[in-house]
Image 1 (cartoon, rainbow, N blue to C red):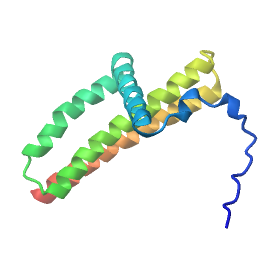
Image 2 (cartoon, rainbow, N blue to C red):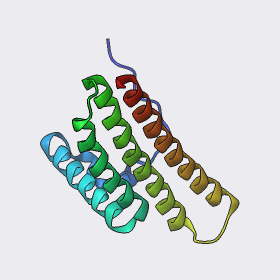
Image 3 (cartoon, helix red, strand yellow):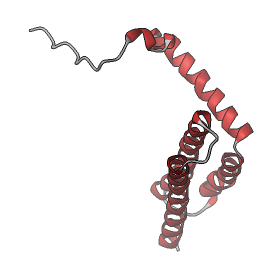
Image 4 (cartoon, rainbow, N blue to C red):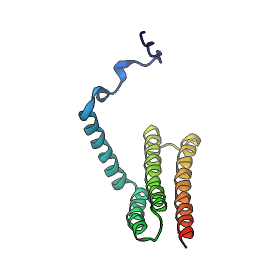
Length: 138
């Protein structure tokens, strides 16, 4: 039995990225290079990301020296990495908003404020996880 055709979403294939045709190891290699470029750009251009990287540099090794179970240690490290992920997404949102217009607009402010709130929530997750894991081991 033939598979049904994908739905027509009204997308013009000629407007797709020329990189979409890459497959296999070439695609993985390209994706890795784009990811490294993104990390470099975030570190060089975003003060908050740079501060959070240094926080991670301190907290992740500290998690290995604390007398906590491996499951707790994993949660502690994952929570710190989550902050970096959320900050990367927040920085991407801010860059896109600024690319569209540097003019003050209520929707631009809302997008940036929501991104900032997401970073705050991720930092609260770090605090909660670390306190819970450390108190459990005490």
